[in-house]
Length: 354
Image (tube, rainbow, N blue to C red; front, side, top):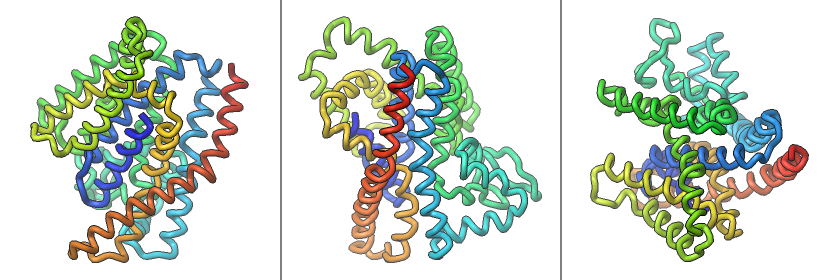
């Protein structure tokens, strides 16, 4: 699963750089939600932590230190380098004035960044909007790490996970409600438009719970029939999903149909993908780069845009190569210099809480 997570992170990188490859950015984010649901169920039901306090502190250490490092580096670059995003960033704060306090706080605490995508300004007043780009001020431009809005969605799930995942009646009821709500919003015409397609937590909650179902329903079935002990099936499933993710954009089927197919197969395969990662140290190490890649790539793209004329084919090709190479290098440094040190503390907390 580690390599697949990194491929999904690179799908987002390519998407923000201007190319749709692999799954594309939107579906990659949604598959991350499914993975997160599986892992949270594994952690909570596996009783990795005796108290909710330890659970939340561990989640804090997983997300915030790397995010804060990237946010501070981004701010430093913005002060000394006039990039497209830096100009938009300072313009947003200038136009919002004292009303920008919410933006300032979300840049620090992450909470609410997803709701920025439902916020616009009309007649100088903040208002809920179904199109965040249709606004007097592009509020989202005030985010230091714009793609971190997904962490706001993640934090919403973390907030309720310890209270619903231990009772299957709770989470299945919520799953059904989330699916019905998505169908209804699609029916009335707004569920197929950004930001409701993949930024609205009540709809994305179903994807987290697909991951929960993979852990609490699919995994016990596989265990009963000793499928999780069959290394051939585990390897085949992992490489099959990897190929499906890599070639997804090339499959000549309607996007909605192949998305549903991939989500279904991915959910059913999650216990096998997780088993492969546990048995393969290389896969696990590659997977550790997925979060740093995801969180650092925007500033890399923003700076590199200054050095390439993307209307020239060769320079555009070199631009994509540079984006991927430098993002991976940046992610490696974040993993080695930040995450590795934080992991020591996380493991200590895990031992203390058992």
